[in-house]
Length: 247
Image (tube, helix red, strand yellow):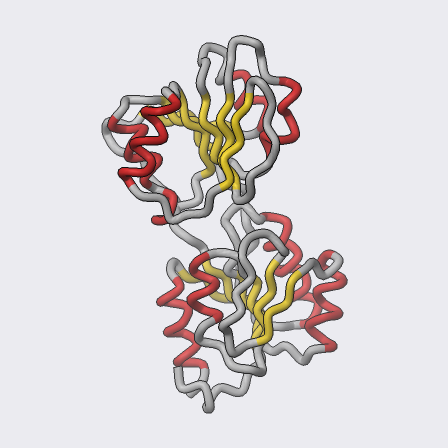
């Protein structure tokens, strides 16, 4: 992007790998906002802001006070509340709202995917399994005292947390490799995988290993996200639009 030609001040809501690639195209006038989870980049030209806004009202106030002219939403597909707040704040302030809507994963012929809507459905679907592998983030950590005596959970999230006698917690950040996932599945003898449908290439190898081992996969359905002024399937598309918008 010809950074010197663009005049609109951008607020980018991020936390994903795609968001970071977009942030690298922004200028010192722009702001990259993170909720506070994960690694905070320290090599960007734009301002990096960490923390919430106080809902849609607080975000709208921030947009007005900061003279934000374009709101970009490159948050995780399951960050439904953040996206809802963004759409609401954009409407309140009459600010253009662009959103990156990452394509979801699609099952292949050999996959055994089972859709679930919520935590209750996950637990019901796990009744006959002994070694589930959770890749849902932090939510399973709040249920450690509910693990049946017949099960041992492995939970992978960004940061290591204490487990218990029937739960192992792995702190790890993608991207994950096929070889690494293959070793992890074999070592722990997982008999089912529980995953969000994030659509991320960085975390897709777990699905390939589950397929190779003929394991069922519980897929937590994506939440509904608000319509944006413009929607993009990739960071490259969004960056190209920013190029065009700067002319």
